[in-house]
Length: 141
Image (tube, rainbow, N blue to C red; front, top):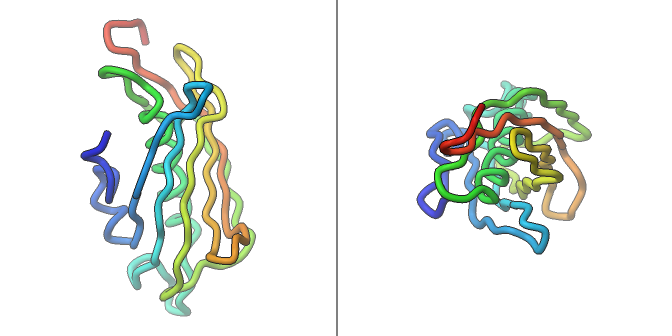
């Protein structure tokens, strides 16, 4: 997983200003990831506000990264089944934000996760919850 730090293996993450900086597993074998987001002009509308779809890309990637960080061997997320995204306040060009993804529950075939974008004062900018299909190497789909 170390090789996925930075853009998470998806060039679009870096192009819009996102970066994953660290990841790990908590005491319950649930994964987490932390990163940063400094919106680029490509991520923003003409008024300098980040588009909702950009939040979706970052939050989805953070949840996937957190889940993959908790899986062992060649097990990986296979698909996003469902995702709900909420935007509470605008993210703006030139500002800095913190990304965080956490696994809430991990079963054999399904993972549940949540992710947030917060400003530097800790205010919640956007959040998401999601359900993901897990592929287990050598197991049934």
